[in-house]
Image 1: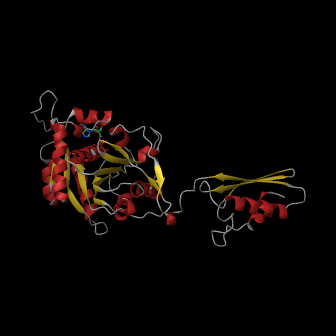
Image 2: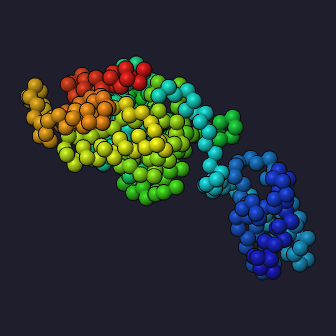
Image 3: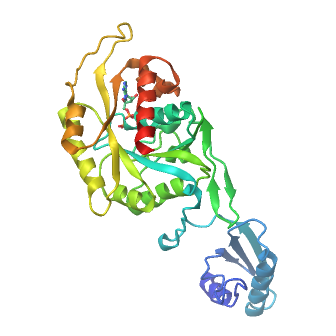
Length: 354
Ligand code: ADP
């Protein structure tokens, strides 16, 4: 009598609520151990207080006793084990949680490091300051920065079960904004190595399985660049359009073209609300009226004209914006000129979006 033999006996134990499937094919047999004249089988149940636990433990025990040599001691244990990540085809993401969101807008950039997340976080705070109901989903798998930028890195989102039995994540609320980030589910400093379909599914869950409630704006901080993950995100999440963040250097501007082309691609075909030129000029704290165009002047404006999209806003490079990002107190909370630049951007976006 060995594990495999015992497993074949267990094929007889049929789950009464799952058609004619048995506990082996349902993956409920967690472990089988045999020593001398004792058999221990552990059954895994996907939820606590499964009403069929006792029945299945009893049926399993009876089946083993029936098949095993007389005198064998039999123990059947039940444990609760979270369901294995759902099979790809079974990823059941409805749109119920974003049904009451007026505008879902992706914040994109052709390349990393242009301040996309900084703009996303500050724009969210600025929209909230203007009285809009706002949420932000940080879908930047390569470097989720929302927890740090909002000082919520120690928060762990709670979850609750929806009426249909689906797990729904509750967003973290701070500064009048509902935040969700893939970073809340990773250890600090741990590299997120999700790629391909797994990353994509995790991202979609993080947007579609969140209790957003009624919102005017749900901003999605997209991963930098343009690729399959972007196309899949835009297609599966009812994104109305995008806002593209750039800096004025030529290298960054040349990537804007890729971003524009992606959203204009016939398979995506979404509105581009406009371009945001970040780090448009440098202003020293002590000389707030001085503007130094260290990366060149009017690059964003020319690029916007070239592609026929509005230049929605220009954000200066200011030390306090970087400090705000690092300290978890976004610059948009302040009434300094840099804070007001985000308020202006928020106002223009709200007018454009309608
Ligand atoms: P991305 O999301 O495009 O990779 P981040 O938003 O993470 O870029 O910004 C990169 C770095 O630049 C951060 O340290 C951030 O604080 C800083 N930064 C972004 N925009 C500004 C700005 N306007 N002024 C000063 N620092 C900025």
